[in-house]
Length: 108
Image (cartoon, rainbow, N blue to C red):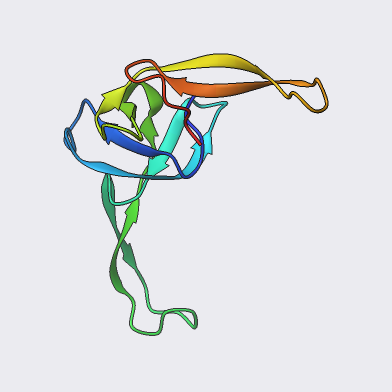
């Protein structure tokens, strides 16, 4: 899965199409992500010691990873992700970095 926690993403399909948010949690086995402020669901809770008032709470529900695209850090538009091998000049070690297909900018 190419999307990770704390990535900025835009929803490209579903009820929240066009909205942007930060990835809070990733479920690689289920191919789902939880995005901040997207796919909100209401839950009716009884009064308890934890929440003495009870009532209706809103919580983000997982969304399929195919319905979100990462935002380009340079242009702030949706983009595809590629991988590039970077060789450290001091140690000579290789590591993989995620890059934006549109601008070639490295994604954190």
